[in-house]
Image 1 (cartoon, rainbow, N blue to C red):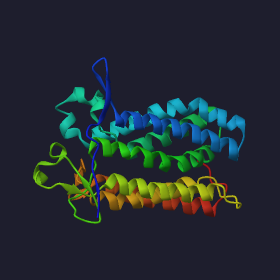
Image 2 (image 1 turned 60 degrees about the vertical axis):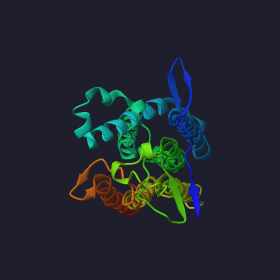
Image 3 (image 1 turned 90 degrees about the vertical axis):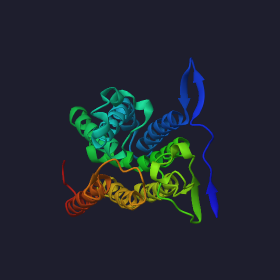
Length: 267
């Protein structure tokens, strides 16, 4: 049996009494890895000019993705934020949604592609390769924060959660599914699959890799969400994230079908 114990504090240090958290450090690493690795892939697959173009709009993409992630979480948790409006801006208190980040990122790249006149699908494919690697790294922020864990378990792999981070109905239960680790593992698998496809000798239609990422991640997140305890909004007894996963899976599968059927499909 493997038991994972949390770090004793989510805070690395204080600067002028302001806490510096491991989560923030990990997010900084995620953005750095994401930008630099995407830049490398653009140069490797295309050319320096395309890589430089990505580098120019990367800061806007990062900012919009953070805003989108926050707005989606606030929407899903509106019952709390409607009575605590100032908390909407307290991003350091936690509360980001990966699907909000994906939606905002897609919209941002699409708009910039129309302004800068570049191929939306090609740029999206490169970012889609790198994104699951960033997710795999970013999930360890949940470990340091002792959040986003799964249901109680005494299985082969389990996570110890300090009592102060447990939900009220589970105060006497110590061990839970380490869903951060599950998702990180499957995100890495997605990353390696997409990397292999990205450098395949057979030229794939633009947009295929982006659709495959969304399909793969929707499946992974759907099943992981079924054991997480922190679903912030349910429709009936179904977490809204699972509903979004189903929608993403269906829409991405249809788009993938039409891309493969019609190489000249335009957005």
